[in-house]
Amino acid sequence: MKIKPIKFIEKKWLAIILIASLMEPVHYFLLINYPLPGKTFMAYDADEATVAGVMRSVELDFDNPWSKGEKVFFNGALGSPYPYLMLGYVRMLFGIDALLMNIIAKFLLFFVFLLVLFKAMEALMPRRHELAFLFFLLPLGLMPIGYMLGYATGVERLVEGFSFEFSILNNISRVYYFVPLITSLLSLLFFSKGKKTHTTIFLGLTFFFYPFFGFAFAGLMFLYSVSGKHGKIQDKFKQSINELWKIYAFAAIFLAPWIYARFVHPEYFTLYSQNSLWWRAHLVGILGSYFILLGIIFFANMQQAKKNWKFLLIAGVLAITIMIFELKALGVSPFTSLMLPNAILDISELLFIALFAVGWLVLESGLDRRHKFIILAVLALFPLSILNPKYVFWMQYRMGYLLHIPLAMLAALYFDSFVAKMKSFGVRKTIVVAVIGIFALTSFLAYNYRYQMADRWIGQVYLDKSDKDAMLFLNTQQKGVVLASDETNYFLPPWSGQYVLYHPAESQYLGGGPDRQKKKADVAAFYEGGMDEDEFRDMLLRYGIDYVFYGSKEQQLGGVDLESVDFVEKIYDSETAVYKVRL
Image (tube, rainbow, N blue to C red):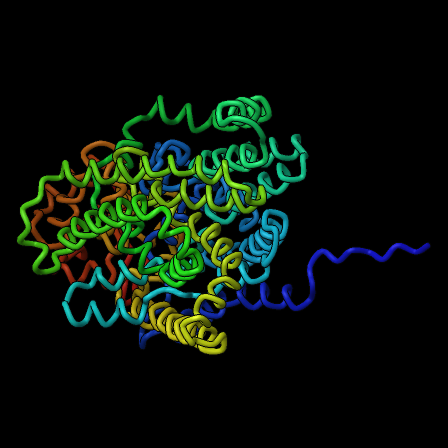
């Protein structure tokens, strides 16, 4: 008897995944090939320039290009360096620039991520995994409404708050997210199939590439385990701990580099433990992003909602409280006039976490194991995603990305019930699908507008072509430290392979060695014409400067005459000039 082979994935889904993966490369193609007149594309944003610089650190003995002598392993504000170091070697092998390497890597890794996610949903859901995958891909947020609110109120961050998180396609589009998302989903997938060795390896790799996701998926693994246990709650917990402790223990070995960095260089981690009220992944953004999914889940469970109205009321009050504080922080009138102590916000956030206790109702229910797990995952990730970073080391910013996955799964499970409920109100399925389609289409169009147009007028996307040409010239020169202005400093390391004096972003305020603020002030004073020749010489010697960059951004700051300075030599002469220090 001939056994028919099982398909890994149907061709139609493979085609959908390929199209979704190609969307961002198409945007890059347009941005690179159709720039503003006289401009050239440098990177989509400052973050992309930063990771491209990390990629090039393999040529600098793993030094932080924005801080000579500081290794990229120890500056947490640079993100997770390990995926980019690997790409750095691949880039050198094929002789391509760091931006192109990043684009290719994002395309390939997003393709693999979507494949793994599809198979994970198939394994972790009792039904409707294909619909869940579509919900994951569709931009179902309030981005168009976010734009209207922003224009009406003049508060630009309302656009960001209600639309930045609208689609997971935009939020996880970084290599250092894709790689650990792939390994973490594989760890959960293998755990669901009882393959503990594979689970341990991939959970360990997740810890290595991105500890935040490692901790999150270790927790999700526990929830999946306890969802399938029987007996009293405490017995279920004991059984799950016995099942998982060895996996956790061996996987935690992969945390060694991060533990070393945390205790040897704690100063680089303090940034992520600060008190921050508003940071894109809070409740305003989440409700605005996922309101279609939340609506499906809520209306499909009206009977359960009525039964547990007390929990919903508490959650609603806490959510409104947090949103009021956020709107106040955004400067939205009349919320700015409210005099509210921050203690109220702190209490609301902590009580939101406490609501996870309702998970015991789920564990005691007669639902399918996988159904229980998905609900528990939402209950765990939603409070974590709005928690103040001072409690969880900025972890909430990442949990909002993960929340989209179980929400899409839960909405798919309840979609048939939702349609039936809407039908009882006289709303046909075609109307439901049409409304979802309209939101998906308008959000998708708004997404493309934001990607192609909104950032085209920001200096951190385009620079003068002469500036880039000068950077490429520096790429052929001996390695050294380049003096340049803030906006140029973002892009010099990835395009020139040289060091600069400091990283201009405030998130990097601990990078650049000691006296960063003094360096910034000195550089500004020089380019604004506030230094005499002796002071300039002293600055070059003090900071070990090898090259002076004088491009479009530097020229905008004021007038500097370097032609008469006898200790610098012009080695590149165009609209942008480069000088070699001869001291």
